[in-house]
Length: 142
Image 1 (cartoon, rainbow, N blue to C red):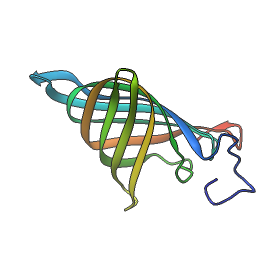
Image 2: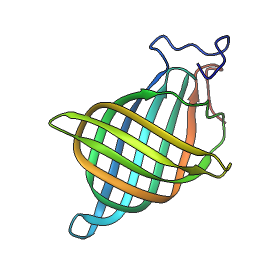
Image 3: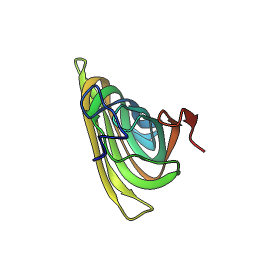
Image 4: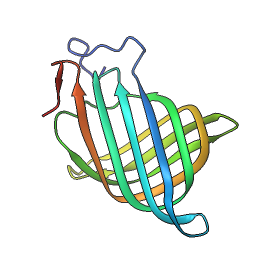
């Protein structure tokens, strides 16, 4: 619960639900090309809905619906970061992994498992993360 059980509630047990994509939507050589990643995360612990998008170099195509552990609350700030995102699955079983660092000097590692299709990955030197909705204040994040 973000180390704050008074203000945060997580009836599902420190989890978030992520819908994500990573890969090379514009292929240049074989499966490689201009990469992109994107996700929408419902964070039950911090009671936030967050979004993420990145551009860079990529390969393949992968989509996922996955459950993973929650991190710290994002707050109401846009956070730029650089990182690697891998999503997808084989025979319906899949997951995602996201690793990188942000403009606040912090590194992060997010992961989860669930259902996936295809395999894709991207290295995004530019990635934006934003809080879309804060359920604690019942407001869109400013």
